[in-house]
Each structure stands twice: as C-alpha cells, then as structure tokens.
Image (cartoon, rainbow, N blue to C red; front, side):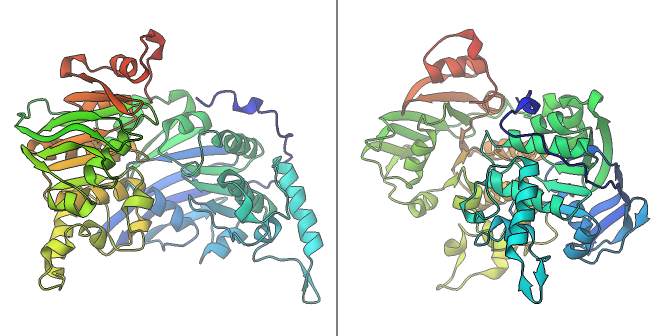
Length: 523
C-alpha cells in the first residue's frame, strides 16, 4: 500500500545531520485515577534511530502513556528516563527543553500566525525588546527547505493543508533540536495521498538518529514504518515484535487476546423474526432512486456499494435527515411518515452517523450527557431533567459496552476513537431501539474496539433489534451480515443471501462487471 515511498522525487533530500541522539525509557510507569488503573508497570525503551509503534485497543492506555511524557498527566508510579537518566519534567515546556516533541492528531498551531511565528512560538528572536522578524523568517525558511516542504515561512498556517501543517510541527521540532519525536495518530486527519510525504520524513529522521514513538491503529502504517511494535492491553505491556517477525494474526491476538479468525464471532443461530423495517421505492428524487429493502427483527443486514453509490443518503432518508419525495416506510407492518430525526427516534429508530465528531458527538460535553442525549426528553418531567435516571442509564451503558472511562463526567472529546464510537452506540442502546442503522460502525477504530462493537451488534440482534449496517469494509460486511443489499448509482443493484455472500459477489454487483481481479478488501 505504501511501498516505494522513498522514491518520492518531488522533494530534495533533507539534511538532518545536526540532530542529536537520545533514548527514552519507561521504567515501571503507572497511572491511575482513584481506583481506576489506566497503566500498570509499563517497561519500554526506544533507542536513537528507531521507530517504535505502539498498538493497542481503545482504552489500553496508549494516549495516557504519551501524555505522561510531557506531564500533561502526572505519574502515579515509576519513572521516565532520557538517555538513562531521570529527567525533571513539570510540563510541556520542560519536555521541549529535554528535546522531546509531541505531535497530536489535532494540530497545536496558531492558525492566524505565519509558519515562522509558529516555529519560533515561545522562543522568539528579540533584540532590545524588538522581535527580529527577518531573522526568524530566514531561519524558519532554512528548516522548511531542509524538509523539502513546498510552503513559505511567511505563509499563514490557516492557508496550509493539514499535511503541510504537520510538516510545520516537524519543522518546529527540528528547529528546537528535538531528539525524541512522539506522534499520536498523525495520519488520522490526512487524505489518502498525504501520508506518503509524512512517512518519508519519519524514515529520514529515524535514519539520522531520532528516537520516534508512533501511535497508530492502522496496520499498513505500522508495517511500513516500525522497527519494533509494542502492544498494550488493559493498561499492561503485552509484548513486542521486531520488524522481521511482524504478522497480522499475532498482532491481533496480542491486542484482543484471541485469534484473528474469532474477530467477527458472528452468531448464526439468532432466530429471524418478522419484518421490522420495510422500505418500498423510497427516493429523494435525486441521489437515491426508488429503492426497496427489508430488515427482520434479530437480523443484521449489510448495505454495501462503492463510494457515492447512495448508501448514506438512503439511510438518511429512513431516519428523516433527508426529505423523501416518494416511497413508503413500514415499521412492524405499519406505514409511518418520518419528517425528522426526532420522529424517527420516537418510532424506535437509532442512527449511528458516519462522521462521529462532526455529526454525532458533542465533544465538549461529558460522556454521560452524550449517552443520554436521545433520552432527555423522554425521561423529563414537566420540563425538568431526571438526573438520577440519566446517571443510571449512562453507568449501565458504560458497563455494558465496556467503555474505558474513569467516570461518566469525563469529556467526550478526550476519549479515544474507539471509546467515542462506543459512546455513540450507547446513546442508541439507551433508547431501546427497534431498528438500528449503523453507518460505518468501525471506521477509524482499532481492532480491539471493532471486536467490542461486533459483540454489541450480536447482543442487540439477539434482543430482536433489526440492524442495517452500512460499511465500506468488505470483510466486515461478509463477516457480520445475514443478508446483503448492494447499491450502485443510487439504486439497489441486488440482494445476496447468506450462502452467496462473498467479497467477489459484492464487488460484482457494486461495479456491474464480473472481472475476477476485482477481489478487494476495501470499497
């Protein structure tokens, strides 16, 4: 997938010869919040000129571990050594002084300032109380040129792409003579083409002696970049695999505690009930042509198709997000009219949106408030919220879905991607749905969180919930679906029964062709 990235010829070879070298060692590192043990006796070392990837399910402690490095979180036990020596780090500024730079998913940049001003932020060149802007521009441009970046030191950060903003963060690290680079899911916000340049830079920095910690849930990246992969699970260090020994089944087993073959664990013995959701010739007069499907109680039905086929739009029509111009929706044999999501919720329909951060979660609110968002009105009395019931609902949901949080009041935006996704699912579990529409239920989450989500889906199906699952991951569709509908160009192109579901048959319907080479794992 990312092979040949070092042949990238657009940028000149960067000179990182001035990099100093340092190792970082975690010795018996522990972190707890009250009685909640997040990390326990972590022992790990990263040498100069080494990329160590850290994998683990959501809630395994990956993000907490790196927040301990710059003391955004305080240690409960153990110590962190730089070059084998204890280092007094009281906060991010001390971490920078020790040669450590952390790059997070969300850029730590001032968008209204120039690239140069961001690179020098907190360490501006000044003489006689006056900032030396020309000197800053010149030095910043020299670092940018070393990276082979295409932007100018005088450009405002807000005008740059996400990938270019990431390069600004790396440029800042080089300017500050950083020796240790820690990256937390750096490709999460990048487009599919952007990671190549980032990977090239990481490998160059490694070759010049920088110690790099790389947090990711994407296997392809880990295989491409890492010299060693270390796995955390439930706050414990499970083990490491060196590059030559990397293999997906073993990594999955280390992360979730069971083999890859058991990942989906689809329960095939769940009895199929009566038709719960029936859609006849539903259309919006544009993107979605007249489409029909049925989902029975206790059934997981996949909805597959190429990007742009109309899957999400059809789901939005059912949930009342988009306005239908024709067609019929029946729930338990009764025709219904759905003008809004509120009406859909009242009818027992839950909808897990594809974009959890922009369309699903309230990132600044607590986990509890996110869980109970769909039940507030139902449980209120004379306009007064029932806070005790909300607490009970959220506590039950956290336990049922194994959401890794220290308490229900933790801010949703601070949770891992997998826990955020389970938080959204728990919102719809809380309404006691008859029908659950899941749009890309495992997108952007690690394999451990995927396994948990599949378990939840099986549990809900067993309780008689009718589940419509939209997914671009073909193994997921094949592994979890009792039946599959395939969309192509806004219409249902075909239906596959249990015995006929395969990646090849889905692709045949999705593309309208029968070429055998279209076998693929991702639509």
